[in-house]
Length: 339
Image 1 (cartoon, rainbow, N blue to C red):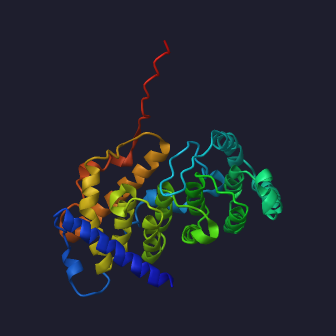
Image 2 (image 1 turned 45 degrees about the horizontal axis):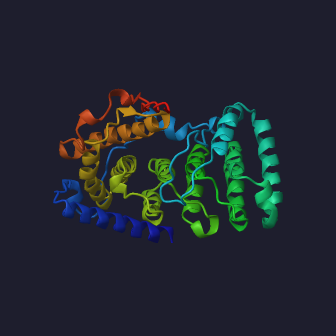
Image 3 (image 1 turned 60 degrees about the vertical axis):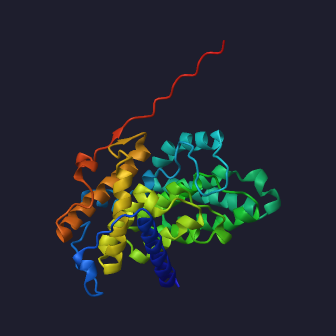
């Protein structure tokens, strides 16, 4: 079933990109390798010599989670609600403390919080009076194993039954936490079954989901993740720079003629977005992290595309040297004093 969904998603994404390219009258470059017989192309391991991939994907430490973002963010494709100031402040106040907990204390607090929530969610009529939206974020932040992540997931249908909608922050926090605990397939399952779990996928959550899958998991899993973008009314992959670069990188790593063709179809869209988005600068740490993802993916794409065609996938001038991103917070104009 998963393979069938992946093939459908792969074909749909390819057709959508082809249509957009034709509409914009752009010429797609097909590598000579992709035009040969339908066999998998042998491409050097894109990630074998890259320490950044290891730091970001393999050595994530669950005990140092940033599962709950501190800043309120707009949630694309989800219900039109925003995280309350109370939720954001509560999470920010406790996050640093949780990061320093010993494993034993962490497990104890997780079990206590889980027991409290399970007991009160068992009675949907009184659940709202005892269980707050931020409780799920707190529990998620304490989770440090796949088993504990699954325990959080088991609460989601109970949230739905009680009529409690998870915080808008939960989408990104959950996708990120699943990556940190090395179980992104759980996130893929949750976001792929809205009728059961009632969890919307935001654009930031979708980026984390793709980031958790595109290096270490089969391409078919990534294609299933891309198929969720239209389901949650998110921008097309070709309109989102982090997603597009990571998908293109995974397609080259896979090395089949079809996947290489898809990566090539994404190329003009990536080039166009780079002309208007300066990835060398970011407004905050989270934005800088995503720009690093883009820079690293572009570096790998250029490396492989150069070997295959003698050309760069994108101009090297778009890639910050050393993947260093300058953080420049947006300057807000002070409000004029009332007369």
